[in-house]
Picture (cartoon, rainbow, N blue to C red):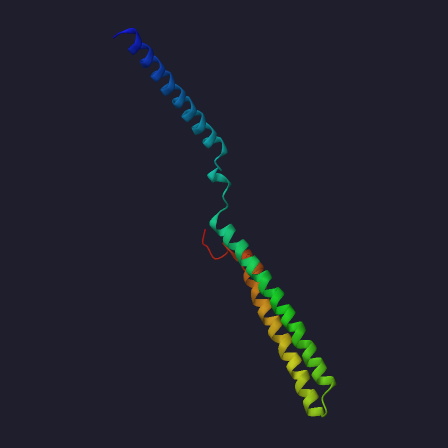
Length: 124
């Protein structure tokens, strides 16, 4: 090997070593900034959070609709010309609030009460 080939070979090795060091630094940085798998919640915790979120949205929508239908029923009862129409409006108001109680009661049971009973039906 002559001197010119030796210099080219050394320059090539220096560049390869430089690229190698950059690759190692990037690998270490990737490992440092990668999220840990232990930080992820359990599947059932996430499912419970989703159930509560859906229940909250359903309860909000059903409450707004029940309030709107109640206003319509009360206005209909007050502006009705006969006692029969007024009684029908008040019956409708009772049905609206009964449906609201049932919908929100079932949702509350599923979201908040049912998790309290988990594990009680097991034999130890």
